[in-house]
Image (spheres, each protein chain N blue to C red):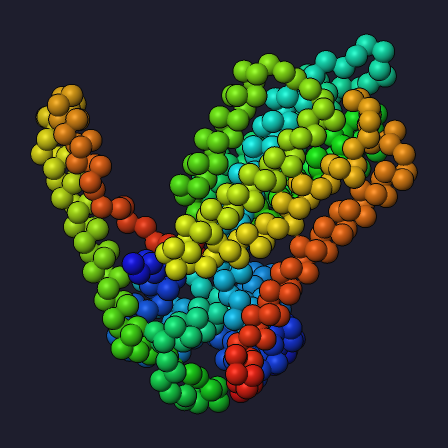
Length: 321
Length: 141
């Protein structure tokens, strides 16, 4: 039975870097076996998660890029702050509009679209993060946001346009790495900024549907980029490089915020996605794919470049042993 | 300015302060030191050991074969010893400061548990110059 369990743990190590597996593989497996309960035949799911995390870190370490993993909490907090501020704006401004009487429109309760459920879920995340439940709350908000598309397709209710949902999902995926700690100053600032935004939006009293709020997205992208760079500079002064890694992680959401609406917008204030021409849909999908590819390529190129620079220093002599 | 150690890092270094340990020994020792609050798993532990080794705080001490299993023992380096001492001293000063503040609070508080406005103002002024509360950088993972 021990050999069976050993082989299963060993199989989970196959994605580690080969050199690392040769050096550490036996040691890791034997430690798992030391910790295994009597009669245990399979690795626990938590062990699989632990090994996946360790595997990613081993690959990053091999490329001298562990800063990427260290920066995830910073990027997650900034993404969560942006996502909740946007949710506050959409809920207060877009979801409280009055639909013209000549429109055939099914409103879910007091709100204009199904999006209200997702925005409320997002608005609860900073408070949940302060209580130590940030990650499950973000996962719930993310699932609610993603579920809007199939639910709207299957029902007669309207959902927010994709140019709103796509960047929100991208922000949510980064925000999933929010730390499990109960209190952090960043969470507190996020909650305060969200509350201030909601308050200012409510006081403005100008409720507009999503299509009239297009300019909000590039501004949100610009603000996120600016805060990321400022954070990177402040941390850089303290010889902490995590800020630049966080900015790199946030490149995808920033680009989506800046570009998606330009490809998806159509010239009707009350258009819903189901009424949009197919060409617009494909343009939006292509833009999202290209932006995502650029963001992923930027991360991969940075990792490759760091590994290459360490292996081949300025005089051109390989140092990899 | 040296950044505070993360909680797992501090506990791993503390576990190695007394004697060299292998992976399983480190996991049990860290769990005991943290009162069961931190249960490292091997994937996380060896990732942390890699980083500590890269930073020169921990080094491989020896390898032994016990019950047919090869075990690697790790120990603190001089640099690791210094880092642990510095962090322990930082935490000690913080705890001392917090203890003094609590003693001041108990002394200034009247028997009925309420405080006068002047007392509250005095505490506020002192609070502004207070050292940071005890905290570890980063989370548990």
